[in-house]
Image 1 (cartoon, rainbow, N blue to C red):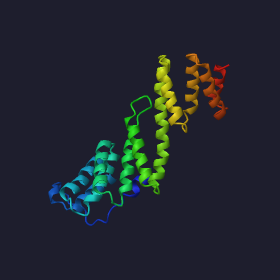
Image 2 (tube, one colour):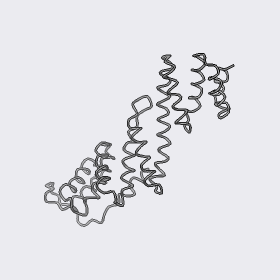
Image 3 (tube, one colour):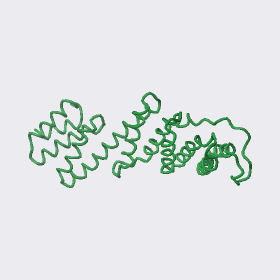
Image 4 (tube, rainbow, N blue to C red):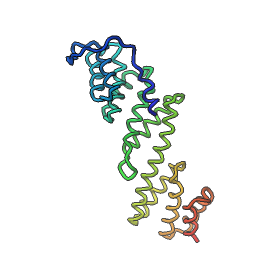
Length: 243
């Protein structure tokens, strides 16, 4: 991923180094950009973002301004200031939809959400945002390396979403709230069939149907599990339940 993130961020041809003075009102756009990039290479991301922002605010019509918007977003991202990065990227996307780096802007925004995904037992707002943003990259820029990487990451996002449904479903099952648990496991069966959680989800449905006395439904789901995952440990447990 790092290669993709930095590939588009090559330095524009720059002349002399920036002045030593910190009074940025005396700096040209080129000098501000140079200083910002130097801070970026030194991993001083906060200062780097600040100087890239100054290029845009102090020299909005210079040739450096548009590139600086994207560079500021990248510096924010590197500093884990995801909200600031996303805001900068959304401005770039809104005002420069035809820019040659627009695919990268969409991709970096998706990565900002992706890197904020929480463990399965916590709220999954960032997971949903990552899902939607990755989908945008795939749909809008299908023939790019960004889309290929987004597809791989989307598989992990789907698995994470399924894991959350399973976590909540198990909680309801332990609490004997069988209908709510069944709804969660059914969501996994219907929406996340390609994830690693499908086998357990089918077993949990067999388990719940058995607990509430719906033996025919339990056998029906157990048959699906046996047909598709005959060697699964969850299938063996399911078959033992319906004997």
